[in-house]
Image (cartoon, rainbow, N blue to C red; front, side, top):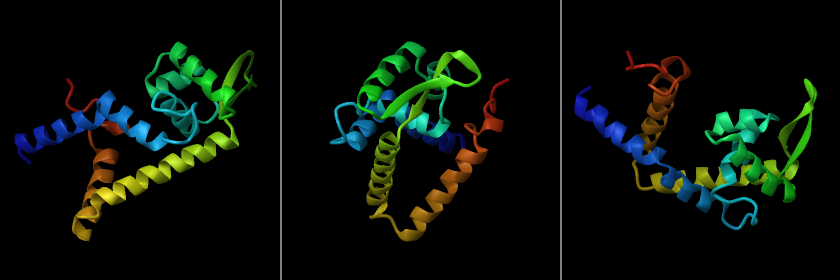
Length: 156
């Protein structure tokens, strides 16, 4: 592989990982799903769906937002019935955020929308290209510089 290939991949990833790119995608995914679920609150609800019940601080680390921002956005989601606060069984003074059934259903809708959007974008590709891309992307995620065991790759 050439340095040019690595740079092309790095440039493409830079575009995908930009906050503005994600916000646009989240706005599309959450369109029409209620006032509480939008490009700002989606990462909180989606992240909480992945992590399971956790504190605002722990969720903040998982979704790369500070605890105060998570709490503010969680307040909106709670008022809409998409998440709830529950006592932390390990610490009676603390509370955990947890997704409600309604919140889980909305995240399922957004994930279906995302999959459909990706499939539509690949419709013009030859079938084998899309299949190879999917396999290679999975391998890159599992084994590349973003993998848990490869997080420090290239540093030193």
